[in-house]
Amino acid sequence: PDQRVALKARAAALLKAHNAVLVAHYYVDGDLQDLAWETGGIVSDSLEMARFGRDHAAQTLVVAGVRFMGESAKILSPEKRVLMPDLDATCSLDLGCPADEFAAFCDAHPDRQVVVYANTSAAVKARADWMVTSSCALDIVADLHAKGEKILWAPDRHLGRYIQEQTGADMLMWNGACIVHDEFKGLELDLLREQHPDAMILVHPESPKSVVEKAHVVGSTSALIKAVVEGTAKEYIVATDNGILHRMRQLAPGKTLIEAPTAGNAASCKSCAHCPWMAMNALQGIIDCLETGQGEIEVAEPVRGQAAGCIERMLDFVA
Ligand code: CIZ
Ligand code: SF4
Image (tube, rainbow, N blue to C red; front, side, top):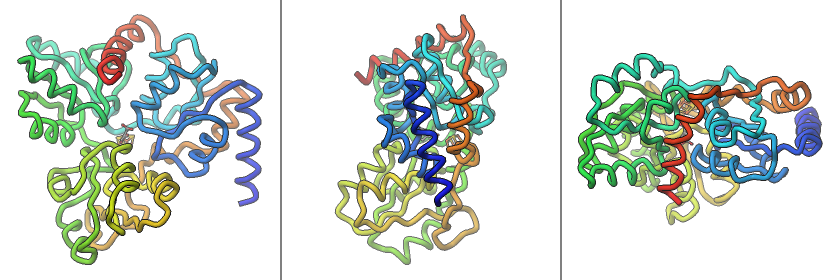
């Protein structure tokens, strides 16, 4: 603990010395989340991270999350320096949607609006009409559907199916999944809820249908946090990356939070659902990138400019 306190103080001093701000995701280590709040940064979802980074005065953004989050920051703020604690922190959705194969898929369906999830590379976003996050995906697809548009959706098949069911839109899907959320299973959740019949079940829509259909609340990370803060239940079963429990405990200290079970785990599975790439973010990485300048994100033109179009369209829509 003493060493962590020392590392945190060192990272805070470096952020200040470099006029940098820390933008962190809800899924990263609690120490990094605390450091972000304590130094004037933010801990949030990918939508709010992108917006915060763009609007903040700091010329250096340190993005604690996974690669697409650093890329989105750079795409929106090309004049700023964007550093990440570990450039190898990626995402199974991004890995599972290579830009060349995706471009061929789009070329085969020119009559469709291309809507991609934030969890994709800059090159995939450059090919898209719209980028969405889980906080605004439903509204944007519903709006396109109301205008008579057909949709090509990538890459998360569970989120795509959920949106399709909710909106009735005509959606052609890419077959991607998040390795963390895909592990939550309906059968195991049934066994757990028998032990906690009054618990409210909160589920991120990257989870399989068998889990989503048992939820009291289906939503983005921000929506799930709000559900805990505002909910009247005492117990909450949480089906998303367990990094989010840190923030939930801070905002709703009196509530009991139970991690949803993953495949083969009948009981609540403590620390089962945690993204290995989010876990690569560490205090030492923040210190290193600020001290050495390593871990800088670059997104070359014309990809950057093309990708900016679909992110800005989303930000204008939600504004
Ligand atoms: O699973 C993720 O990577 C999420 C939920 C990202 C985000 O904040 O939208
Ligand atoms: Fe990607 Fe899933 Fe990790 Fe989020 S939790 S970064 S969607 S692998």
